[in-house]
Image (cartoon, rainbow, N blue to C red; front, side, top):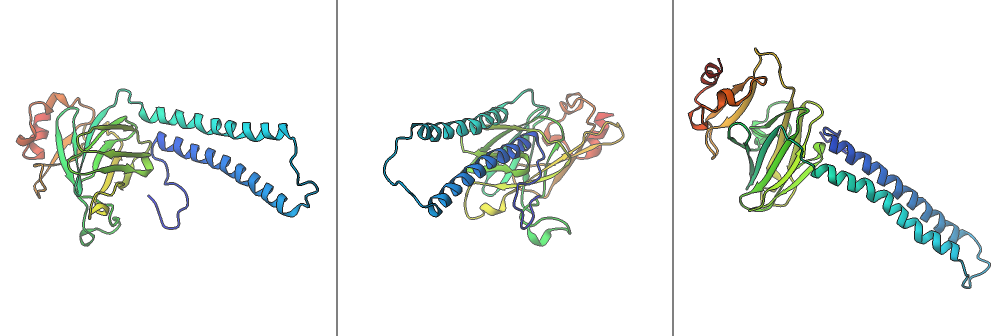
Amino acid sequence: MAHSSQLGFQDAASPIMEELIYFHDHALMAVLLISTLVLYIITAMMTTKLTNTGPLNAQEVEMVWTLMPAVILVIIALPSLRILYLMDEVNSPHLTIKAIGHQWYWSYEHLDHMVMKYNSYIIPAKDLLPGQFRLLEVDTRMNIPMESSIRMLITSVDVLHSWAIPSLGIKTDAIPGRLNQTTFTTTRPGVFYGQCSEICGVNHSFMPIAVEASRLLTTPDQLLEIKIDVTLERSDQKTFIKIHPGTPHEQYLKIYEKDHISNPLQMKQAHQ
């Protein structure tokens, strides 16, 4: 979570973000060395009395100032290419979630075991509870397990949006008619906030993203709660489905379609 007067990045919550921070520090050291060298040369030129201002034959110096920038570019480019390939790698994801941008809210679809659809709207400032963040809290968070590979399919239904969460190192454009893909893994539990990062209209600042990562519970008497909208449109009718994480979903979810889920007891009885 960013705070006032912060100079660096947010604390990394995914391996990709950790790599990006390392690369940032690596590139910043190269910039610092170049800036120091240039500043020294400028200072030396301004303070040293020149004894010979005519042209000189200096092949060695020309070789140095030609090869050094090329070597520095290679040193910066190789780690950058490595991270690009890591960010594009999708290997056996545990969950696939589709994020759809609207003006001005997000909707999500869990596509693996049962199609679960819900909308995520910003909570108005007047309805915030103590401790909640203005312009960042949503009424329905995207719930995921930590330390699991999550594949995100991102698109839009109207204009350009961008699904971005800084602490996870994710920023993927949502383009109408196009399905973009990215992947991430959270390394710790928590709630990670983001916002739409593409100017998409008058309420561009009011479509936040909230991802809640939690540990998978292993004891059978504890349940994982997933909050789902009954309809695609915004509605006050909510459904809570309680799922045992240790049980394969298809054993008891396949007999229930989304429109037939009425209450948590019904799902609990189906599991028993």
